[in-house]
Image (tube, rainbow, N blue to C red):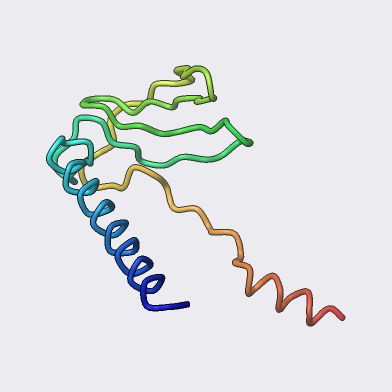
Length: 110
């Protein structure tokens, strides 16, 4: 590589970085990014059911909605009463063992 090629590479990289920064600035100015302010709709939790389907628990003003969501539609599955102020919306569930715990269990079994 000669000096002209190196200069062209550096200028190209600077141009790409400037383009990314300009796109980020435009996105913020246009309001396309969500700012973590008060929102009327809050997704409490979601569970994947497959490639393009999942169930979501959503809080909306005075109700909690259980929604079935696919790639083409959203269906209301159930309506729950609003969560009490002092409790959490989702009950504590024992989490599944992580990858490290499962791997060590398998390795001990050998």
